[in-house]
Length: 294
Length: 273
Image: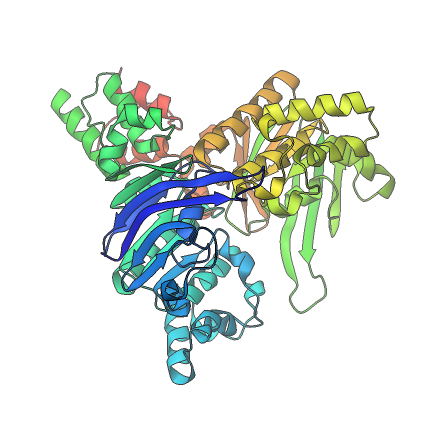
């Protein structure tokens, strides 16, 4: 069980008039090797929750266990010495890719930028060079072409890949991505999602993707966690979640376009399953229903 | 309302890393029109957004707003009162530490009486559903909430033209729908001209006219029937809207579907007669 979160609470600006209870009694287990989607409105606590996983946000109360690492809250104060894991090792284990990560590029060359994180966790020499090269290749860029160029001369989509490569060079086992497709054109979106799937099978078995795009999570994720007002409201497979119209309504979750279309067709008398999640499934369902009608 | 004549724009002209963002674009937008601007990343859409209100000036050609040339400095105040632009990243658009002050920034610069400023601030915040936050600070908000404040800041100027440069990209689906509702209402009821740059084809399909950009040039334009031109859409790095994709695949499988299909309701009507 690589990730186990128990009774996690978080209050922003505690003790001031601006105090905001951002996370309320979160209990969650994420097993190895799954692709999770996390959905919820802006301000629902998704990003706060996942910033805890590599201790970027200091845990206030509750515990988080990730493999051999254990984070224990100490009421907002610095954790007790015995509860301070090796943060560098933890940050190498849990790779974080923030929203618009291309804004965080800073080095003079792509190679240096990608090497930065790995260097920080103590990787050097040939090992560092090998990791940088394979990370750049893994994100689909040509090492010989881009390594010595300034990251700022690349296109938006390429910059995002460089930022992702910087995280991959640390060889994380858990990859957390905060809206990895935001702002990309439709083809760029598709490319990044396919890339994440490849990274999952080749390098990093557990992937957690925060997303506002229901079609994306419906198609790519094994499990979906729904956050609202700082609470974890629901955890299930996409098929179960999106086939429950009442739950979606109650949690103000948009239905994926595919599922909405299936439901609309079904409501108008075409016998298609309302649990269709992907375009392929919907096309098949329509053909089957039409064949049966004919 | 807006007139671009053979506009070229070159970044870092003359330098080693010179890059042509626009290679000669002519287009005009009429008063009250709702135009969607689509195209791949790097196709020149955002460069156009900055040209519309004179934030940058064309390397060649001209941009006119109600006949006023953006290259003429004395027009700039009137041009920016006429054309409001909301950008992609709200963090770069916040100027004050209290939300209502941030939204008031534009109308204050117009020199309006204070009663009218506070009325406009109230209206703009209500329009984006953020009135409860008026005394809070923008820096504590999530990305999507900040973007709604940025939109309110532009709304408060009551521009005749609103340019949205992927301003819904960081919003959640409900936030996006709210903003789209505000924008379509302003367009329909107050005849505000809207130019919306977006990667969401379903959003673009709601516009009166869609302009497809490709490598710094206009590759095509038209109503939503433009989505029947698969080659054009795909060559611009875009995707057909879902209903159009499904219709196309069903036809490939031999199912007979009549008419142009772009919107979900059109597909439903075609399949469930």
